[in-house]
Image (cartoon, rainbow, N blue to C red; front, side, top):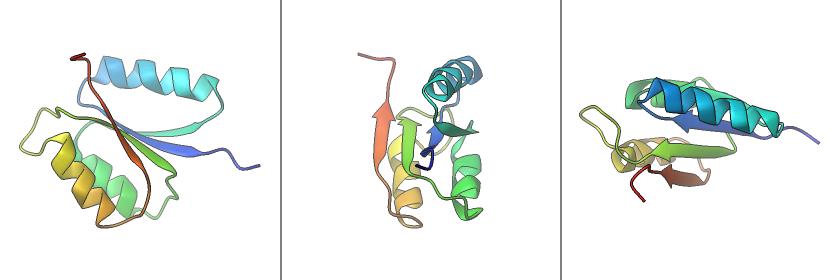
Length: 86
């Protein structure tokens, strides 16, 4: 069975790294992106992505929902939003 690949998008590098390490411990391949542009670049690179975990509040001109729409315009995969505001 192929390990699933997750695109993890968060503008906080510390949180990004913590989530990446946790997911890798469970056997997932994790690609990280720290902003909207790098997330879209990863999607356009042709790497097969099985799931996108996205911070809903990215610290830039595009938020997580706008970035998710741009990603979904390019590939068909589930997107889950993350937030520390719960």
